[in-house]
Length: 405
Ligand code: ADP
Ligand code: MG
Image (cartoon, rainbow, N blue to C red; front, side):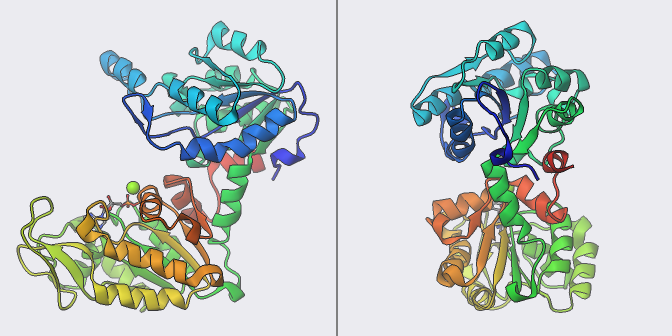
């Protein structure tokens, strides 16, 4: 696949870069600029080579069904604070086009100087963006000479800015390539897809909220892994499918059959919690206790894996050569229920360089950052949904395949 290092004669060329600047905003202030920081290597490289860099990204969602809502969403998801932060990080001015199409945008793109950057307002201000509208893709593609895909977190979406633009540019023989961030993500996540015998045992840790969100990932990991350790709320659907009592814990009735079949076909590959941290209410609990076994009594709900489970999972993880982790083991947002998730982080930290360890998933990555384990993993993906779909689809995503193909 073509990487930006293979692009020739960048000086004076207009390079359109799709970034993932979908940062958390609160009242117009950026709460976490990690996604902007992660995009810097590609942007700096292009600027250093004298390119004219046009940056595009989406931010949040814009609803087009109701005009009042549309205006509210646009206001809430205004990308301009990113231009300010980017200018600070690059230590140079960054232009901003509030126009997302038409002569205004073209004017900004055409007046760009070599070695300078222009950020375009939120791509989702255009209704056609998420529909991969051909006319919109063609207009955006006409703005530049080269396209670089560096928005890993959006690579699972076949939208105008992630798919339509490169497809259109290729028609006219314009070069398309992946940026440094996407290259890094692909390299690391594909190591969790194709496992060489010397990199086994391959252990997956799966948690989080819903089984139904993760069915495809479970299916894929069942084929690839030697062990799957399950925690989080999804464990209760598996527990109920086995006939255990789960109290008032959340479970998905329509996934019970699936969970049962899954456990049968996995033949011991799947491990489930052997004890749980439970509370007598999700919000206003008065009691937090640890169960003696995998049963949860009436009036209580499971909030985290218990200490015996943490110990069992740690033992499995310490034998692994490759680990893929998605989904927190408990309600890690609340101090009482962080231990299970921290135990996974600690096992990974203990392994150090002895194993290749990857964390993917929005909340999981947030937990790793919150507990201070970012540098203990071989790789923490910047893509929530994208990292999961990468595993599900054997290393393929539409926004990457369009560059590769
Ligand atoms: P990711 O974003 O990493 O893919 P998910 O979105 O699937 O992860 O799940 C994260 C959410 O799961 C967190 O908000 C966490 O509070 C919740 N969760 C984990 N364990 C439980 C539990 N036992 N009960 C309720 N919610 C849980
Ligand atoms: Mg999530």
